[in-house]
Image (cartoon, rainbow, N blue to C red; front, side, top):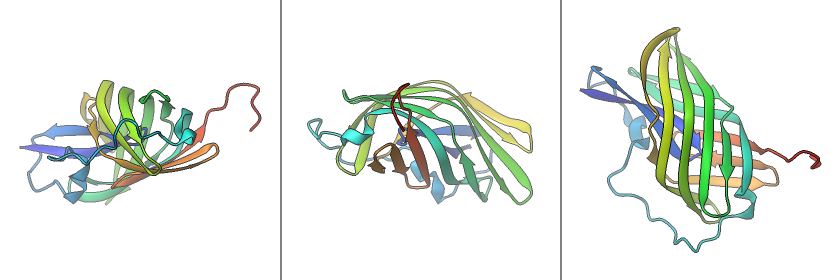
Length: 190
């Protein structure tokens, strides 16, 4: 049996990384595994749809919250630190050296993401759709400080809702949300 433990890696928010743990009971998965690939993708806006100008630039994740099922327990994970670059040509990239932490029923969980993701996106005025992800790196799960599993970083694509104002960006997925601040070039006033 294979259990998919959901690890949302906010890749421009939208691509979700996941870790497959072998040998876990089939009863452990929950409905929160909805971020795994869906059989029929959502309609993607035409490439001519111009993304909101406020998306373009370099971003630093300041807050991340997700609710994932871990071995039958719902765990709220929090963290920050992903770096993201959104380009006007419809490409984006993230760099992750982050730890997402959570706890439930006396157990402490850590999801450690270390890698990069490159992908394509199309955005309208409220939704971002992603395609063609390429990942490098690993995702590691620790429970109570002990390494439980480690696997190559993987990505699935799910549309995201976003809102941005000035140098602040919020991304929303089915089981997570994140907040970002624009990385300003040296000498540019805040």
